[in-house]
Each structure stands twice: as C-alpha cells, then as structure tokens.
Length: 134
Image (cartoon, rainbow, N blue to C red; front, top):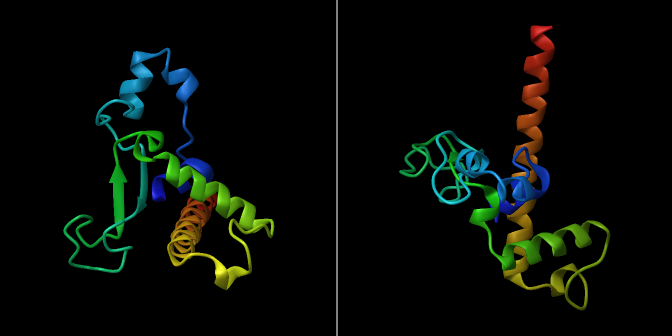
C-alpha cells in the first residue's frame, strides 16, 4: 500500500512507457530485479517508524526500496488508492457514512494518510534545505 502512495503522491512516479523500451531504465528503476540504487523510501511497513529495535529498518523508521513502485503493488492496492482519492471528494466506496465502511478499508486509508504526511514532510525538509543553500 505504501508503494502505491508513493506512486500516486511521491517522488517515485512510474515510468512504465519509457521502461518498456529501455533495458537501461528497467535496470535503473528495478522493474525486473533489484536496482543498483534506491528508487524510493517509505515508512517501514513492519514497525510504521515506531520501533527503535526493528530488524527491517534498523530503528530508522525508513524502508529503502530498490524496486519500481509499480512492481510492488497489486490491483487491490490501486483500487484502495482510487477509493481514497474519491473519499477526499466526499464519495465513499460503500453505502452509508464513514463509520459504515469496512474496518480494513479504514485501516488502509489511515496508512495512506500517514504515508502522504511523511511524503509532504520530506518534501518540506528538502525545500528548506535547498533554501538554506541559496
């Protein structure tokens, strides 16, 4: 799900049309196997950035991904992303109000919102760092 958020809102937009015709881009973006350099970073999916002893992120709260975000998501994640985007416009996927939606969907929306916040904070810090250099 976090990869889908970065695909939709982050700095890791898929370049699928270009990658389909370039073996070099496929290697650099990790379309088929691990890329030589990180493609994007996300909040650690194991600890959500809260466990200083996490074995996956070594307590950093960040999971560095060496694969294209498109290769990390399935159709269900994209369906949830579309539902999230519609919910921002006031259209919920199921009948009823917010509390009538499934718990798993609301959990997914929470993950999406949290990851969007992390992306926005990272972009803000990057802008501030660039402003200090000038």
